[in-house]
Image 1 (cartoon, one colour):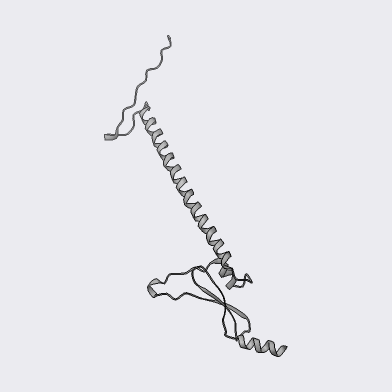
Image 2 (cartoon, one colour):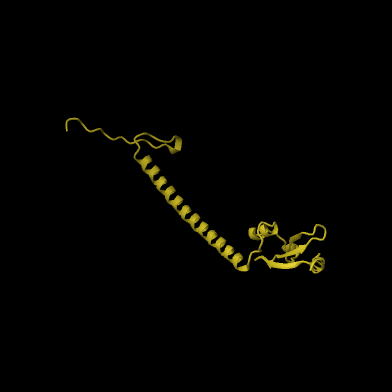
Length: 145
């Protein structure tokens, strides 16, 4: 039994066992490190032309598996659910930004309108030079009435 375990252990040294693929095509492997005897985890990037190469960000679920923070690699169903959740969040953020932007436009218009009304009804003169606007004179009510 011990002999079978050692034979199995030695046959696995350096041999990478395919574990899974992420949504961007990176492949993940596990292998036995011949130096330390520990299981190691690695990934391979999809083959690309040099002109197509971009800085990749490893998905958090795979990064935690690579570091050993999680025992089981993420399933394709889990990855798709996370992707769909991110898309939904992104859509909600865009809708929120549009809503806030529209509210800001309405607020600015209202503020502009108030400023115009304030300038028109001001009894004090405003501006100087070419932008001078004389104030308005409103007679006071007489006390005789």
